[in-house]
Image 1 (cartoon, rainbow, N blue to C red):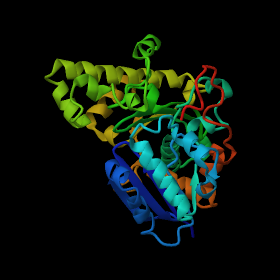
Image 2 (cartoon, rainbow, N blue to C red):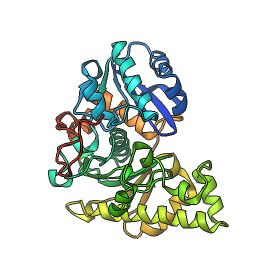
Image 3 (cartoon, rainbow, N blue to C red):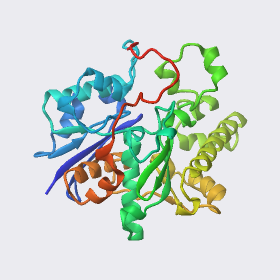
Image 4 (tube, rainbow, N blue to C red):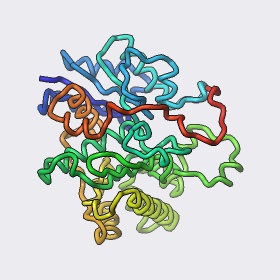
Length: 358
């Protein structure tokens, strides 16, 4: 009997999902700004469940598997990639929560990000950092469980493109034979709030780019309505030309990313479906657009949710914890080679930058 908790540090909310084997013992969500102001709230939620065997802690860009109790400040930096100490954003809250978990000696681990996985060829990692943060890896685990149970197949036979549409970021991952083989992270695709990849010439004109710049410039900023939800933006796009322009740009980037990552499979015929994840993917209009544009190539499905409140990433984090302990999800986790993750998120970068400016 394993009691585990998975945590997803989202842009809008932090989600907590706990299991005792397959029985749900925790399913909660807290606005991210509340945890920034009062990080101890996360510990209150964690401690509401007694006798926890393992927690998958919020891992940011991730590390090869490491106990939080063994983390040092360099590890926290590599997980968060926080260069400027004066820059105040949600990453400060994440770092403080990791320090609190360590101080309380809670049994918790940091898990890898997509780039750390040995299932991705090294040549795909060159000059890449954000191929998918650790929470995107967690969402992929939930998608694999979905296919295993829905199609009654072995984890090694799961094949799909995962599209996670979140509040801030959108990510696309390629899963072949139950393993992540490529990923396009949220800072490389236009999101609801995030700008996505920056044109090189534009980056030169901006000159100094900060973390805060990554969180803006996307759909809601182009539309000029950063206070609206995606659902409200969709409604407005029907009558406002600027909002329609923003939405068309957003969908165009998403479709191109899906087509691009389909080229990473050893055989495109292996792709059985596109699985949509993230709360925004549940919007009927989004589902219909992706379905209409891509259904002739791949069936489009909505990822199964195993909780009522928490998002797919928190659920997948709990499945990882369970699998690492030898529980029901061990076959999925072993096949993904999460235990064999290695290296640094800063490996294979051939563009000079100041690694010590943090």
